[in-house]
Structure formats: C-alpha cells, structure tokens
Image (tube, rainbow, N blue to C red; front, top):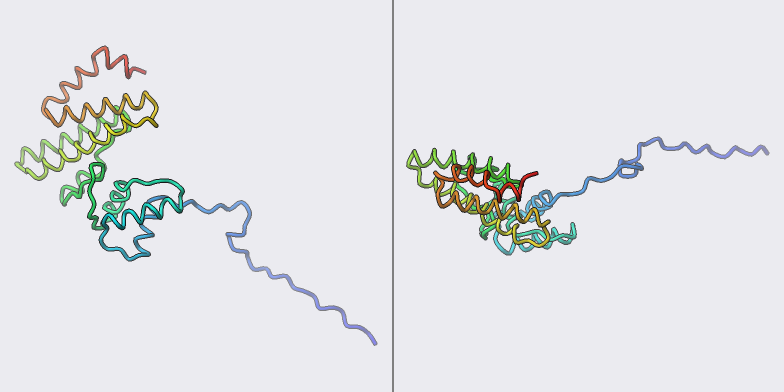
Length: 204
C-alpha cells in the first residue's frame, strides 16, 4: 500500500510584535509621565501631602531615585490639578491671569539666564506697579523670592561642583538685591559685573 506523504507544514507569516524584534528598545518613562499616569490610574482629583508621599514612593520604586515633594507638586499644578501642598521650594499656586504670564519666567541655570530672567520679571513688575495691580506685584515678588531660596539651597549643596556653588550663591545675591531695591537693581548689576572680584570669579 502506498504511504501518504506527511502533511506539509505551512509557516505562519504573521508579523511578530514589535516587542520581539531585535534591536528595538522600549522608551524609558519619565518622572512626569509616571506622576500623571499614577494620578489617572487612582482617579485623584485633589492632591495633599499623603498623595505626594505615595507618588514619591511610586517614583522611587519604579526609577530607583528620590524625588522632592516640591517637584511632584509643580508637575501636578502645571497639569492643572488642585494641589494642597506648600513648601519654600514648591511653585506657589498662582491665580490667573498672572499664572500664564509668569509661567517659565524664572530661570537661573547660569548667570546669563538669571539676568535675562530678572529683566523679564522686572518688566512685568513695572507693568503691574504702574497699573496699581497689587496682586500682580505680589506674585512677581513671590517668584523672585522662590528663585532666591532655590539658588541659596543649591549654593549650599555639597554635591555640586565648587564653581557651580559659587555661581548659585552669586545668583541668590542678585535675587536678594532685586527684592530689596528693584528700581536700582540693574544699575547695581552693571557695577557688580565691572568689579575686580566678579571678573576674577566668573571671567572665562
């Protein structure tokens, strides 16, 4: 009796999922993504100290690094969530229409950005002052005060390079002088930048 030939196996030509393809790497999650995804998953509407601590634990478990409560609060406020948390480093909950105009104006990663930031903030300060807008003046000053506190904290951080700590200490002085005498600040800054000590510390 003639034997039947074995059945021919037809290979599946279905495309494998992208996860199985060699050389394809998954995109790492950022802190911001994890924070917002956690709040969506938990359906959180208001954020207090307990929720911020839970988020910090979530970030540490998934990324292996610590995250400050002020950073978490800032991300949530920028996303439009109601955050009942305040410390000296957290962004103050600024009301509209001031929040839109003050957003992202505070920068001080180096001396040039700090000066440019203070120029923009000063222009807004003068606009509000000339319009007798006390709330606007108060919010501008609160942003500069926050910059002073953050710069002072960085200047005291032993993990920063010594030259960066000196730079942050200088920037903290700039913020302090502006808060004390905003109308005279830029005249003072011109004199400060021309002095021998400043050139010795910060000349390239």
